[in-house]
Length: 381
Ligand code: PMP
Ligand code: GLN
Image (cartoon, rainbow, N blue to C red):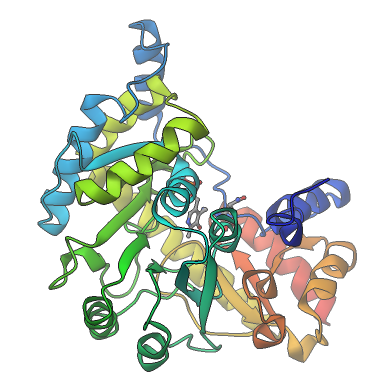
C-alpha cells in the first residue's frame, strides 16, 4: 500500500539498528543520540514554562522569544541579519525543516544537487516533493568535496542541499570548498538549503555558514536544531532562517505538516540559545574526548579510519575484518560482538562507493564507548 514515491525507502536504518541493539542487548554505537541529558537548567526552564501556562499551540512561526533568540544567534555568531518575524521558522526538529523546504520550494521534476553520502531524509523528502536528486559522491578516507563535480552537476538544477558539519562523514567543509560551491550557486542561480545541525560541534577547523559567503545570503535557507546543540534530540525543536521568500515557502508547507507545537520546549530553547557557548563548550570537549577514545579503540580493533573534524560520527573501514557487505557485517556484528553500528552504505545510493565502511557514534558516555571497544577488540582477536 505504500505510495511509489516512498516505497523505495523502506524503514530507516536507525530504526532497524536501534531495534537490533535492544533485541541483542548490544552496545548501541549506531543511532546518533546522546546517552546523557542536556543541561538541567534547560529542563527546568521547560517545566517552568509549563507551569506558567505555555501549554497550547505555539504561533505558526514559533514563539517570538525563540525567533528573536535565533535571529540574535545568527547575528552574534555569523554576522547574518535575519528578520525574527518573517525570516525565521521554528519546526519539529531539523527533519521537518528539511521536509518543509523540499515540499515548499520544489516543483515536480526539479533537480537537487546533493552530496552523497547524505542524511537519509534528504532523498526521501526530495522524492516526496516529486523532485530528483543529482548526486556528487564523496569517497573515503578523506571524503574531500569534488567542487568541479558540483559545478558540473549544477547547470539546470533548481537547488543545492548541503550539510556541514557533515553526517555521516564528520567533514567540516573548508572556506575554499564553500567559496567554490558559492560561486557555482551564483553562476547557475541555485537556491540553497544548508543543514547545519552540528554547527556548534566542531573539533578541528571552523564552521562557516554558506549564507555568509558573497552572493549567498539572498538564496540560502539555513537549518539548525536544538537536538544536537543542547543534547535534547527527543524534544525536536529545530528551525530555519534566511530570506523571507524561502522561509515563507517552508512555512506554507509546515503549517499543513504539523502546524505548531512543542511550546514549552520552544521557550526553554530560547533561553538556552542566548547562552549557547556556555552550554556547548563542555559538550564539545566531552565529544572530542569521546571521538579520540573511540578512534583509538577502533584502530586497536583493526579498523582503518580518518578522524572526523565535527559532529557525532566516525566512519571506520571494516574491510580488514572481512566486511565485504557493510550491511551484513553490521547485522552480524550485533550477534558476534554485541555492538551495533550503522553501515555507511545506508547513506549512499551507490552502496559500492561505501565499500566496507561502518559508522560509529561517539556521543555516548566514556564507559559505554570503552565497553563497545572492548567487545570489538575481543571479536577481532
Ligand atoms: N540533519 C542531520 C545532518 C542530522 O544528522 C540529523 C539527525 N541527527 C538531522 C538533520 C535531524 O535533526 P532533528 O533531530 O533536529 O530532526
Ligand atoms: N541523526 C541521527 C543519526 O544520524 C539519528 C536520526 C534518526 O534517528 N532519524 O544517527
